[in-house]
Image (tube, rainbow, N blue to C red; front, side):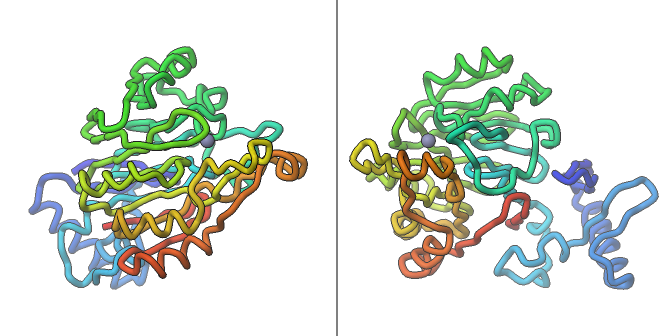
Length: 320
Ligand SMILES: [Zn+2]
């Protein structure tokens, strides 16, 4: 049995390979919580003990009463802001597209749920492309563990190394690496600058992270190679560059919804939709074409087998 620390600092018992101990602990905790009417129990050692049903509650279409040990291995998504997200694969934390600071022309338009100092210990960091709002090394260089595996698009590694990170891997589409037991495969993307998307596999789950790519035909190969996607994070703001005759550089809400009909993720979460360049930048430089609500409507219309969930920064979503 191992212990892990949640993003909010709680220590959670994380049942490991001992099936007998795991079953006994789970049943005892569940019984005690039912008796006390509480969702979790603090024990004298300072652990937060979460029963079977509380960890699964509200996160799965399956009934917790189906009482399976599968419920004990969870994957939790917490959006930090914009396309920056934390994926907790049963205690292994993966951070995508780090963005923690603002500057003129770059505003998340929503809260930022963590700082580099308040992040949990990370098992991997991924960056899809070298735009400030996805690869904020000025701020992220404050993250203390410079030996954390950092996986980026080929050509981006030098910046991470200059920021002090020592274990940088550069990938091209369909190249893969395994770090700390987490499988990371680069997938195609197209944007204003070179970009990759990612398929991340750990704790029995497969997650697609779409960065801020356009909807390109090459993305159809993702479900060919990974036919069972549990969770997809898809950009939806349809960003256009006014000075380039409104050239579109990010998929919009309808395109992201239609892509769900190809990708067939069990759950899809929109990202990349509150960004603003500020009042002047929005008027002169950029246009946006997509909202999370439009994404949900598009998913309902095109991919009824996918559940579209909108998450505020800091709001966890747990898959079992
Ligand atoms: Zn970008």
